Image (tube, rainbow, N blue to C red):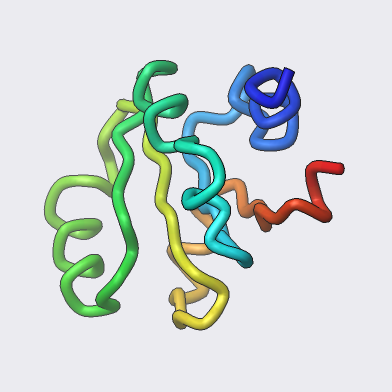
Length: 96
């Protein structure tokens, strides 16, 4: 049940690049990273702006593979990266 609701909220049926703002550390309650990996997404934790920028420009920007970028609401994400992804806020309130 929660898997189907989560897949629908994250739009995994039609989006290949997801930017997930994990507002309430939802991963502590449900391992959605494993769900995304099982759906073929390359899951990346966004923790450092410069480190991700380098990885994005050098190998991820033009990659054809599915990509799920997970970040907390507190971290800055540059505008051009935000525009390249389907941005979703994940929280219990958003799911229910």
